[in-house]
Structures are given as structure tokens and as C-alpha cells.
Image 1 (cartoon, rainbow, N blue to C red):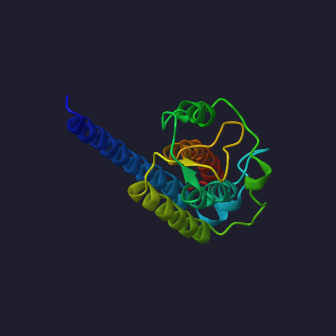
Image 2: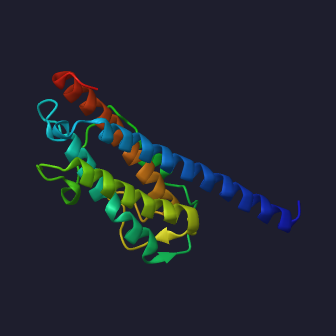
Length: 189
């Protein structure tokens, strides 16, 4: 195989990965948005069961966790000297293990509320648009050096976007459970 052919195949694989990434970002956005939007405004601030966050708190947490992503991935970067997806299995093992319970870091613990459903939905759409823009247009192979992922390492742009996917899948599941609990208590869905 010629070097030129190898470069073309690598670029094609990157395009396939980017296409999949954009699809997954769109899907996780739609899933989260749909569940949050399906709640009655008063259900957004209902505590579904002892020790749980409200739907509004979950949405605020997602916004807090994702709001720094554009700044982090567009900040200081360097060439990556390791596989660009090296830490994706670590991220997946943390956020897609639905049996594990975690305490959110202090800087992304949501307020007690009350939370305005429409404001949360609009902020979520805007945040995801900014993240999607990065996913569609930036070099995802670079390592971001302004903020180290807690207890892991400096992540590549690709890994930060995989965090967005895994974290939102985890909290979409949580939001769905909350929705089912508060909807059954109020008799609507």
C-alpha cells in the first residue's frame, strides 16, 4: 500500500468516526431533551424519592459539567503522543457502569432550585450546539492541557467528546427514572 493510499484511508476512518460522533451527540441530545421536555413544569422540581436529585438538578448538573467543555477543548492544546482514544475505556467504565454510584465533584453539584424547565431546555440546546460545532470542525486528535480530567489525565478533544456522550447517557438514564417516578405520582406521562 502506498503512503498516499494509507493517508487517504486514515482520513476516511477519521471521517467515519466523526460522522458517528456527530450522530451520537445528536442522539444523546435528543434523548435527554425529549425526557426533560416531556415533564410537566411542576414535575421538574419534584423529588422523586429520598436522596435523589430532581429532574431540574440533573439538567443543571449536565449543564455545569458540559459548560466548560468548549473552553477546555478550544484552549491550549498540544500534539498527542499516544492513541487519541486511550482513555475512552476508562471514561466508559466510570460513566456507563450504572450500578456504581458517585458523588459529583463540588464544582458541578447543582443548586436546590427551583429550576425553570424552559430555561434549562434552551441552555442545554445552546450548550450542545457549541459542542457539536467543535465536534464537526476541530482537529479532535489534539490533547487539551488547560484542565486535567480528575484522577485520569489530560484528555484529547476526542476523549472529551466521548466524556460528553457517556456522561449524558448516564444522566439520561437517571432522568428517565426520575421522570417515571414523578409521572406515576402525578398520574401523567
